[in-house]
Length: 198
Image 1 (cartoon, rainbow, N blue to C red):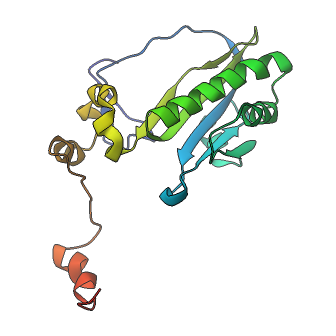
Image 2: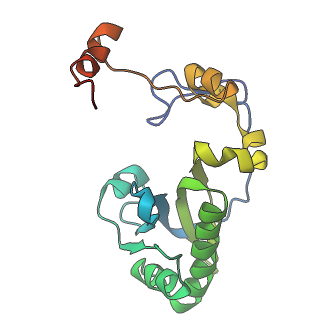
Image 3: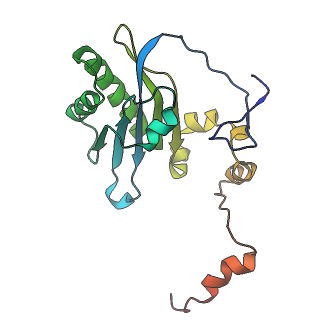
């Protein structure tokens, strides 16, 4: 796998080069879920939404994520332990599993908040036969405007996993914005119609 290109629904047909492989303990598990949190677009009242999906069809987690979540919590003032407990119960976990899931949910939310993330997804969040709750895989996206104070996150960036145009723009502290227009003139035409006083 190392040194090859991995093609999935998320990478697109061109795929991504595999330069790192993470190895984890292969614990047999009984069920899996998805846990995700993202920030809202309303930055004036910064809030985040935490959602969880139950194990409906273990064979297709992506289809599971397209369905309605088992639980959804708004965390405008920060996620509280009782909200994490409610979410864990909505996943259909037993008492022992709930207490362990609460630690994982609160830890995920703290990582999301403390790292200036815009999205965090644990997929899958699994329950083992001995009632452990484990995050087997996760991905995060970060607020570009906050990276100046998150050097440890910047140092982990792998440019080979980004669009080359975005990676080049990032080297110069710029954001790359692709325009979906036939020409620069057609993309700028609406701007030329604005009144001069706007």
